[in-house]
Image (cartoon, rainbow, N blue to C red):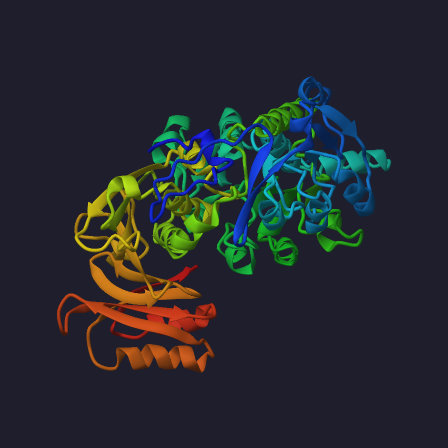
Length: 595
């Protein structure tokens, strides 16, 4: 897989007719190609014309080492606790802005910059406080610092685990209140206990190493973690249900995405061992906090140690915060002197590199692309991302995705089909549903490599007119198990294939079954015995539950044999509705896939 080059950051304005093979060249320093309807112009920062230093506004406290790096390259203006109005006033004089989590970088900020702001640096991982869409529209790159606080977060997770196990916080408060309650605060040992690490990325891996040093047996769940990397640390990768049902301690390290929001809820708590203990130094929203209070009161969860919350700071009267069996800290995961300096250096290097026009590996928003390329590729870009999303959702829990093959069928010569944007969008679809990483043309190859994901590309040259860039795209994931067995092709890979019809992406193949369903809304796939009335039965169940069907297609190997029904739905069916579909005698398996 070719690495993305620095030339993708600021595209050239030249484009050959009916060709996608144009090479993206780097514009002069501090120059940005801005795409506007009907005409293009080049916006050049005043600092370039005057051969002067750019100006960087640091709106929240940053470590001295990071400030020194910035001062070697730019004029640095440290102005803290700015109101939104004050920030909008100052930003028109700045080429870069660095913030932490307390400053909102809104659309108004980008508009007030009048095009001068070229990069926003978030000193930390999360970018919830930056309007990414507005940044991209205004040609502003957004970078973050995702690695420097890894060890600090892992250490804090272990600190909470041990403090919780031995009731340190509660015993401390008791002694300071004049009591001496040794019998009340008898703890539990960690040696020989099973710890389930939910999310086996950087922080999860570091927590694992430390927990094993404490004599714990560690298992992990992460649909993207490579099995060989886990084995090298001495960890077994397991499915989600197995992890939560066998663990004595559960430590959360997954990002907050639509798929992980309230992942721990009444239903999942009910599957856990009675007396389980939970640690969360990831994101507050992955736990349904009201459900956790109920689980604590019922004795299902013996204790919880939390550093993050759905609302920060949480309400003073929060039942969860005040619960006797809950240990809490005010989002201190990255709060060590060493981590703060590391974050400062990492974000300073990213901002300076971006201002120099270099490729930013930690970029989290898409670069501007000329309108001609986007216009021709737009439906295929959407198709590519959705095929990636479908494919990764078909992988069963515990399977590590490492090898993906993408096939492009086209009548164009290889030199006239630049697939970098398509590959980036497939990578985006594969990674984003289960990660906090924002994938785009800038960081797609880096993000894939970082996760051990190898994407290979093949061209299938077709006869016909080269007017359309592509006939179809096929995505295959090798060496994994599927939660929908029919998605496995005869060659043994999870296979999905799609085409663009009338400008709309369509799913046209699942495994070895031909289907035809518009990739809008979400999809239900059913493998069934091919017999009359199946479409009506499934449609009736969905209709009774007020779920609108947008498309329905059936592919079969032969009459009266097996068939796969693909159903496009506008709303997400309830679990009860899906259960009714699964209970139809002729339905052998089914899966719901969210687009």
